[in-house]
Amino acid sequence: MLALKNIVKNYYVGGQTVEALKGVSINFRQNEFVSILGPSGCGKTTLLNIIGGLDHYTSGDLVINGKSTKKYKDKDWDVYRNHRIGFIFQSYNLIPHQTVLGNVELALTIAGVSKKERIKKAKQALDRVGLSGQYYKRPNQLSGGQCQRVAIARALVNDPEILLADEPTGALDTVTSVQIMDLIKEISAERLVIMVTHNPELAEQYSTRIIRLLDGEIIKDTAPLTDEEELLDLEKIAEKEKKAQKELYNLAIKGVSVKDKIKPKKEKAKMSMFTAFMLSARNLISKFGRTVMVGIAGSIGIIGIALVLAFSAGIKGYVASMQDDMLSGNPITITEQTYDLDVLTGMMNTRQKQ
Image (cartoon, rainbow, N blue to C red):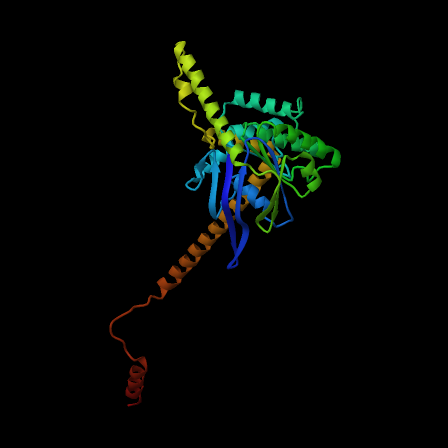
């Protein structure tokens, strides 16, 4: 269950305070399709970013499954984004040099899932969004609608509890938009979907709940969560936990080891050094021509700097050598006493005249 309690978000620009959100409070159901509507600059995307952990609130609290996030550290937010949230962006944000399968696998790679399991889950997610057999194509070989389906598959591959969509049909034609919205509507039957859109017709047709924002405040909520529904959701969570405990108990009675099942698997949101190295190597190989050109340009730069330093050192050494040679023929002696040569010359001239 997700709840926002009196969320305030301020931005500080040029010594001025810009209030993006002014005490927003919303309780969401475990599975529903929520559309957030409002004019540009009303705080829709800011609200979505705070829910997704991409931005942090100034004050208030974001409660996730009954747990406050006030004391969350960066590592906690990383785990939350990787395991609890799925993002669908208007511009797809696919990696051009990666295949469709590689793009969907990436979230699982960060989560530390084994290669065999990654491929299996990624293919299942792609099959679900209607891209079976398109695994090894690259984004530039797909249509806009297919790219958005890849983005949805990437968002679903980690089985997140919440799906966030920022104008998912903004770059699509009407027919493709309907197909994508039908798919998102289907997904909302099993998890919470929160969509930001400027299209009220689309929201009214597909959403089960519409929240309207204006100047950082909620002005309308068509289906707010009641106290009875919140209590029912809590009972469902408790019933689910009770069922899991009962299954473990039955396994223990049968003599099956439940040690690994009792201990929860630690969630990760950081890839290993080896995985990061392999991804970097794959990136360099996929752009071999550019990598070679960058290497040549870098080498020319380094060689040029080395030549300049060498010439500078050589010229300095030559000048120093010339100075030594010239001064050795005309040595200069420095003493504590000095003589006025004009006085001595005058005395010598006087003697000669006498």
